[in-house]
Picture 1 (cartoon, helix red, strand yellow):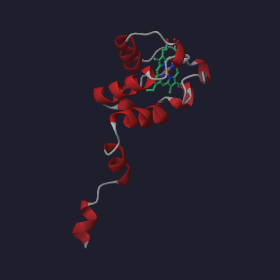
Picture 2 (spheres, rainbow, N blue to C red):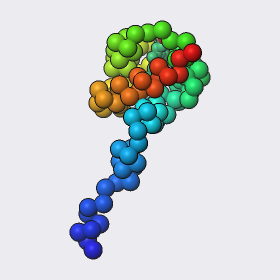
Picture 3 (tube, helix red, strand yellow):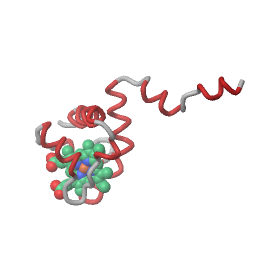
Length: 97
Ligand code: HEC
């Protein structure tokens, strides 16, 4: 009984890894970016740029996510891996018009 309990993985982790890459990108965005940029990228809280109007290249976005810019803090520690950064990048490109 005790052994069984130890083998249980935390539920949140389970949910995340069972999502598709697109869903993972959306979850990461909701968790770490939406409070400033809004779910549709247009919120603009604390001076955040409208992501639907962004014309930055992939490299520029990755650089900005890692280093931060102005009022936007570096998101590197929160996103943890390059893979997660790429998932978020795909998601925000989907918000562009
Ligand atoms: C604390 C608020 C805040 C959070 C959280 C935040 N941002 Fe930002 N973001 C900003 C601000 C402010 C700017 C404008 C920076 C500047 O140009 O001075 C910005 C700019 C950007 C830009 C540049 C848009 C352009 O065309 O110039 C991108 C891309 C971006 N953010 C993506 C993200 C992503 C992806 C996340 C989540 C991983 C995120 N941001 C989280 C505040 C935030």
